[in-house]
Image (cartoon, rainbow, N blue to C red):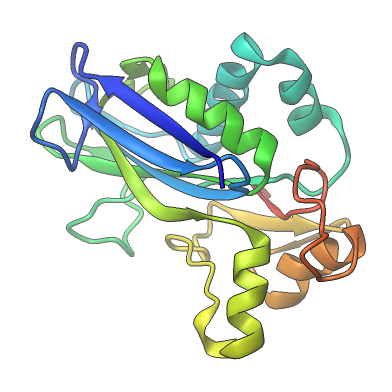
Length: 227
């Protein structure tokens, strides 16, 4: 199976969190359709987030996509389909369940980006090679300190295969899915929980659950949106 190799050189404040060498190599197959990234970020200064700041994170992410892949950005933003990515709220690792809007410049926070289709994984792969060093978030600009793999690269076929032999082994974890600031949207309904029907109804609608399922499409997976 062909593999995609990603080499990131530390520049400025951006570096792979889990490596001590000057370079890190991350490899996953070109068929990868699910991949989760954890960004470690620090406020430029002590600041307070505005209540709907997740809308700002969502807009920043789509703008990043637009700068290098306008067609994909248009699909993610304009098309009325389930969105094949998730974005978390900012998470304080000291207290993951809290959603304090006050940020401390001395504290590192986590922001999770999950790609749920091949096109988004492809874009994320390229983005990590030349990602920005700051997130321009209104009232609370953030410095990107490092990144690491949050959810290992895999494919839907792999998940289906695991489920066939062990139904309890196929998990799609997401940090704080019940956050009041975020919701899962599918088929015109909004839910605070990534329930099984929401997560997999659209996948099943795209084709039969078999190794021939086309995971290269961008319109079959649930997306995380702001209610």
